[in-house]
Image 1 (cartoon, helix red, strand yellow):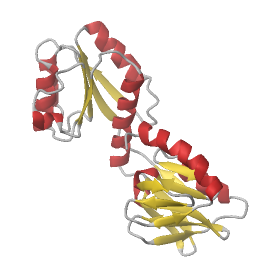
Image 2: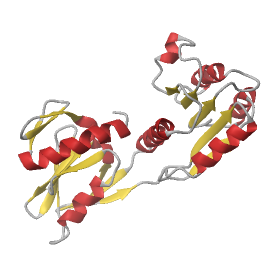
Image 3: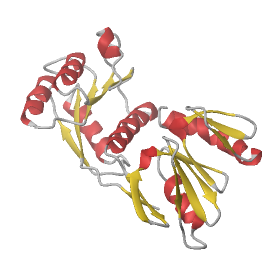
Length: 251
């Protein structure tokens, strides 16, 4: 398998209560291990964000708002962004958590009570960047007996060893049997397990953690009711890592 990802640079607007805070956040996000190219744009007044947005055909992909912004409250900026570019992701730090019920329930606005850079902020940034990457459809190129096949990476529910190859089972139930050179089987599974939403279970299975509902003593139960039998020994270690992976990816 080959994973093909080439998303356009993610455009990130940063604005905080002071120039020093804005510059600190900008530097942090510029150095964040995003796994993709970023274009971080510092803005020093809340009302200037709306002006910048009007000048950009596609707007920002992510906007980080921190504290009491000069020119326009962060809450108003967040609400306006959703009106002008309804799919803009916003991280709102230290804002009014209940400024409007509709905005409070908006999945594109993530709230943090504090205004400092901490692990919660890092996870929020990671979550938003992961969403951007997944929305730009990484493609898995799989070698099959009939030639190479390209499919959306997120359409894979799980992959498991089958003979000398790997069987990729999709969300819709279809199965694709890949072929591999002898001795390269683990490399096929490793390519998938290195993706953020996939987690290896034992040495012969990789699972899309977004589709896992629960574990039993000897199986993984997927959200659509499918049952993936797995040896008990492998599930024990998988369960330990699954909770951490869910939290890290905000699933």
